[in-house]
Length: 236
Image (cartoon, rainbow, N blue to C red; front, side):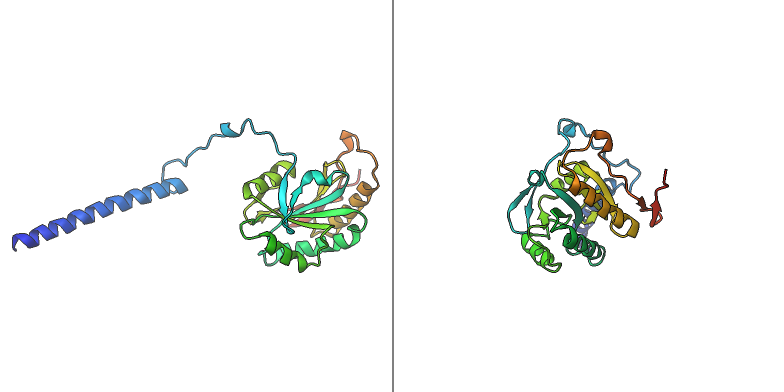
């Protein structure tokens, strides 16, 4: 074997060794990040959030392209729900029920506010088309988009419901004229849906804010996410 061939083989072996080391290091870093190795996943401190006040109001963009400020709802009874337009089944079923409510309670003064959990795809133009498929009135039924982090905070901090990218609760949140969340109801259950209508009738009739102890309108029951069944509250 001549010297040139030996030198070429040596270079190839050396390069192969370097490639193996780099690949192993990259895999180790990825595995550690994903928690797949024996090393503990990174711990994130929450100190940076300690001085940030809990969100009480929010601003998003309506399908019209205009900014929507939650403060605009002062003096109005409103219903909030989360969805995303590319959801093929649940969201459409949910919004079919919202449409039913909007037809009945929109003329009475209730505003329905849909917030997307897929803002990257749900632009105002996409939301306009989606809203049109439900014949959503531009005054009574709003469709909002914006920054995902802000939407997450809106869901968890204001409405106390888990919210993330293309992930949301199926509950409809009822807010009174003074901006207080009064209750939330599951649209799938007949009893809960009926209780929601009763709550809306009561809130529309209110002329003064309720005392703190009476802020929550008691629902007829609740939807058990784990069992998929509606649990009716026992009468006192």
